[in-house]
Amino acid sequence: MNVTSTVAQKFSDMTFINVSGDNAWEDGKNYKGQPNLGNFMGKMEYGKMIAGCAAALTTQTGKLAYLGPLINDETRRLAASVYLGAQYCWTNYLKKNPADLKFTVTWIGFWFNIPGVTLDPTKVANDFFNAGNDIVISGIDTTEGLVVAGQRAKRGEKVWAISYDFKEGCAEAPDICVGVPYFNWGPRYLKTVKAFQAGVWESTWFWDGPDWRNINDPDTSAVGFTFGKALSADNKTKVETFIKGLGDGSINLWKGPVKLQDGTVYIKDSAVATRYEVWYLPQLLQGMVGPSAPTK
Image 1: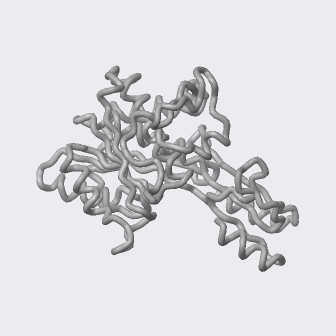
Image 2: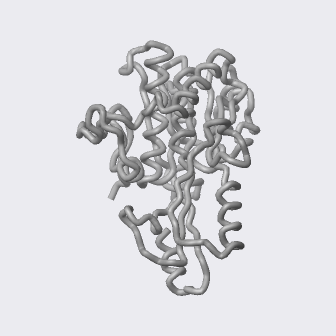
């Protein structure tokens, strides 16, 4: 994001658009006011909530693991969204004690494995399963969590995985894949190109959500969820009910009380989190195990 801003300053006659940044958000922390710089992002928080719901309905041990990339505002809020979705479906659909659902996060240090720099996601995934977690939910851009789960399932273990970021992300181990939340950039790309063609493009920050009429519509929905073969028919029905609730507003998981990992009240009782509060989530949430910030 910062590099994009620097380059946009150097080449003022060109337009630069950064995906996931907030340099063009007037109300954000990092607003630059550069007329040739834009941002857009999909509301993957919803996809992650759906993933969390599917994981909570599927687990047999009540122990969920999240394979995270680096730590920043985006990755904290996405991991937290998985946790919120899991807790909701665990308590509301399965009627289980929220304290009995365990959620552990390990960050590898980047979006994919860099030998000698990051943790090895294959080892991290194996460590998760060795510790009794039976589902690994991936937050990285590669498929190690799914591959490891598939290998262990072939040895007779009851384990599953949720992939990330690619619509066909279940393909490497379809039988144990619960699902995959994915971005669909096409609709925003098309709108952007049309704005350029019409000569009306302006520096803008977009945060596009799903099309709740059909979250998997490739022409309209910025975020989707592919249902995996490992999600049972009954659980799929529950997840679809959950999606409907997210879409009509009857389910709002960013409504207080929401506490941070250190016990601080972040969203007061009955209050609804603002876009700012969600985007800049400063810590993981209470109940999540794992670091909220990089180690110094």
